Length: 232
Image (cartoon, rainbow, N blue to C red; front, side, top):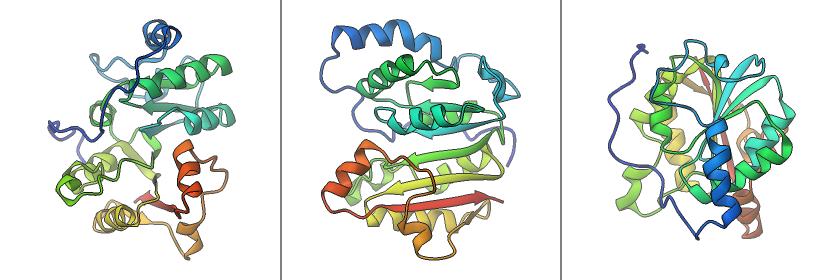
């Protein structure tokens, strides 16, 4: 892929950006703590994205749409030599994550409160060792499929950002979205599906902590699908 990202799209891939009104403490976190962790996309990204962190890291990963941050924080706490970028447009989820990040005293996290498309296009080529896309909005109605995050164009953007041998991990409890994602990545020459047997997509990845949404899905009897694609 070239060094330049495609021209930004105008459509958003997330739903609402706000839920219930923030409590005073949550609003304070957004105002005072988020700036400490927020990426400044108004300035060019460093050539080496490890420089985004004030602690030494060996490589950098990204979680797109981290919700309340449970998985992001678990990963950052368990892998302190890895820099973790988190992207979330929903302000209530961002506030919840900030409280947990502060409480844990994590230094290897940087955040983007906005559209993941902006962040992907800002990052230098081949700068990420892994991207996690966990339980994105499936937009189940056919007329809304164009809003699904996974598309041929988005796969190209992801391919640009991920380094060779890096991975994209995708989890969903919607079989239709799993099939959709598999089709898009299988026809992308930049990626190879890593599954060798059925259990590779039926069972969570080793060490995967899950998410709050996943626990709800299990409670409803849903069977999540776990897909992993390697950058060739």
